[in-house]
Image (tube, rainbow, N blue to C red; front, side, top):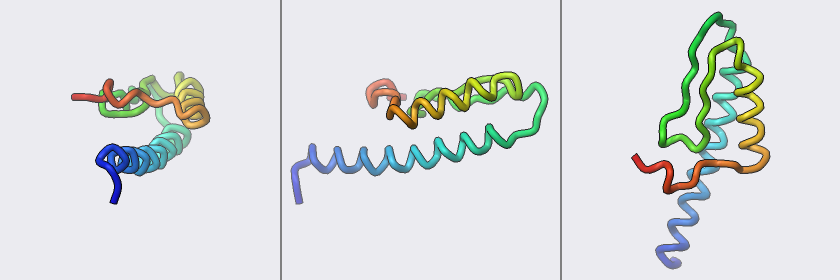
Length: 83
């Protein structure tokens, strides 16, 4: 079994792995969108990485932000994600 703290830590690890997959998917979407003057938002407080910009102008900035977050595991602290 294990302690409640251990269980919560394991659940958070699983969720972060899930979110990393979602973040990679968002990256793929942003990279492939062929649009003009499209406002893109993925900055809800529940997201681990706030992403916002206008495509195509901010594409490289948003991709860099995602890449840096993935490379450095730079995600919003859990306490900041409270709704």
